[in-house]
Length: 324
Image (cartoon, rainbow, N blue to C red):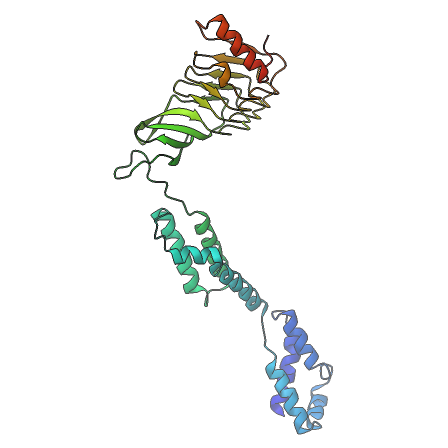
């Protein structure tokens, strides 16, 4: 009976202790509700009047209530969140695959493996803060996995393949021909004056830029001038679409094709300089210059025959450029 009195008093105290969770405090308060306002003498008297089965029931009830602190509850939530991430399908697929196909770079794969191992090793004992760190580290390591694209041009011991993509300061390029050392730019950088080609250097290897990919420069925010240099033969669909400040475009001497909507929705574009004779009327795609400036001028290449000029002019006007 003395043990029960102490258990009741402890339960009353714990029910008011905010270090415990609300559910714990509620359970304790309900169990000792009849004794909360009794003096110690009254409590002793109440216990003495209990039948044996009542003593046993109350003792078992108090013993069965788990004291869960707020800190413990938060830690358990953090642990469950980490467990969910560790056991997620995409994480499991990566770990089970062991990067056997060498899809990911050695550096980023090692970081991912370490983050996964740390999560497994520390999950059972780490506190809430550490569990959150482990979860964040694993998520970040997964997001930072980088794929190997066949080797970086100029790196000893690597083979450059057709279709390989790589990124340098000036943009992202795709190898058109490893044998001929030619590339197309698939994602360019914004600048007040954008210059594309004629070549690009990657790790001391020089590649000819022969094309501009679809939407490679679409939506430029700063560019007022674009210069497309020699070697470039094709300008892809929507390559410079929606470049709101673009006013002046130089078409390089080797360009023979301008894709559909390549310069569409460039409302300030009012000057086009054509440097060579490679561009013919059939090489201009539909709406290539639609929704450009209300008045525009074209500087034609030297030596262009009147017949060819007229055909080209007609095609450019049909594509949307308002040329006199």
